[in-house]
Image (tube, rainbow, N blue to C red; front, side, top):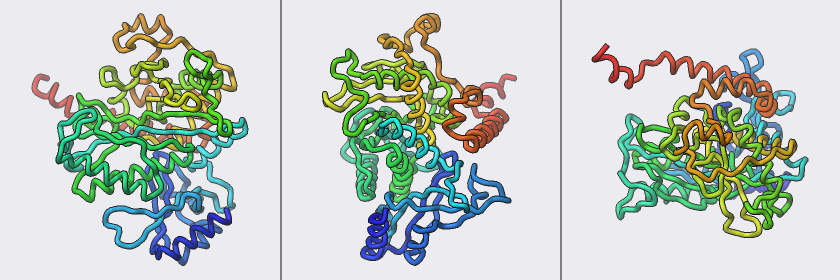
Length: 440
């Protein structure tokens, strides 16, 4: 820690950094930020910076509003974004109470607490998400930049240029990228972030969403992580590739198994399947999220697993490297989730499967979308919740989710999302006007 502090202070001085942005999120995953000057940096690193927590959704009440944002020096990076003329740095913060205790409503703390449970069992949790999103001409509508499709490339492709500039900005911030390409829908993009530990990845996703939007804005384009912005198009997901390591050994890997999965890996998959309905309100937290989770658009709807079957909720890809490439792909999350909370619950569900020795159900070898409801029921394949309201009903009854999130986050999330659903129910949609006004 001391060496990290010295590195931060030395880099700020040597690179003539004028401002340091301190980042954290509210319970919904919206990035919050305030800037300090180098003169305040040493004190911030040692004691934290005081702020009014009552102004942050899901934090504290007005009568107990004082909170501390304590920068994590391990997250220090220089920020290279369009329009930045002077050197700027950023650090993610852990939120503490004035007493110095961690604040249990801080989503980053929720993930750190779950990761500590994994460490106690000898595991390190790694994640690699596939980040999908759309570019539109403006924030006022959904006019696409192109009508291309999967892997398409045109000579004057503005989206390709935006992806390139985004990747350069990300790598300048120490966030490595594995792949990038045009996705299946018009103007839809995908950038896959390279595997790293879950806490770093959750931080990286917050930075990623900021960089994507700011690079797009610099070219007069709007980028959105809305899960399903256009009816009839595939929505945007955040397929998350997960693995547990014991030291340098992939705990999911067993070369002698027919699926290449160890007992740990099989129980982890079983845990994800067992608790999928309970965690969906977190991995898919918006009313719009459930416009993506419908049959016919390559999004997971049914709770089952498979190897080379992309209609399944959980996929076990065939590893490219025989020694350490075994992983699990959880396909439900969308890119507008709070990654700290989503990773916490995905990890906790897998750990629960390991602890309880959940049996792995049979692999789904058919196209689940083509099966009848009766056939799916006979195979023990159930649906994910089909609306935010249903997902909240399931989550609210879950002692498992309440324990992982903690009372503060659990209660606030349920209350806040119930309000969102009530507002949605009272809204008269264009569909209703088009369908009913002229005939009723």
